[in-house]
Image (cartoon, rainbow, N blue to C red; front, side, top):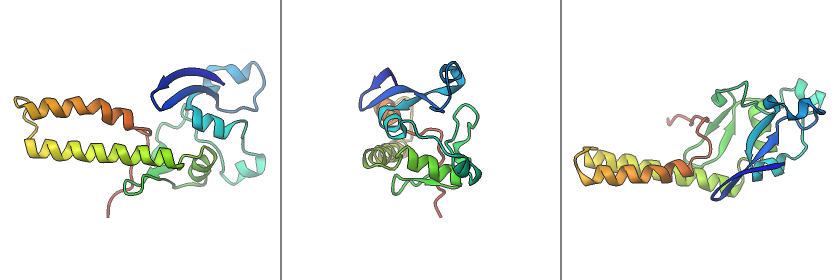
Length: 157
């Protein structure tokens, strides 16, 4: 577990995607991924058994699966992640992705994004007025609040 960088409330670390691999495969680029300290600590040395793999229970590999939406969606009303597949549900559970502080961060991000949209609508997002400048200053706060840019949201009915 190597420390990478502290992003305010989220300390990022290097995680071994498959912790059961032996050296030198264990430290190859394709097995090293960025993970929050929370997720890395919660996952620890966990890896699915052959029985679990046969049932589709596995971690989603960020190097091979760019579209997390095949497995996971975000519920904007609750801030929780919802697994669409056995892999998605297992990934969420094994990384503790619906823990209170992560759910709160997602809700905060959604609240900020909605406030920005509302302000942009009210102001007409005219680049010549001061409201536009104020809105663009809020964008870093919204980006800081984003935990899961790759995960699509559940469409509203």
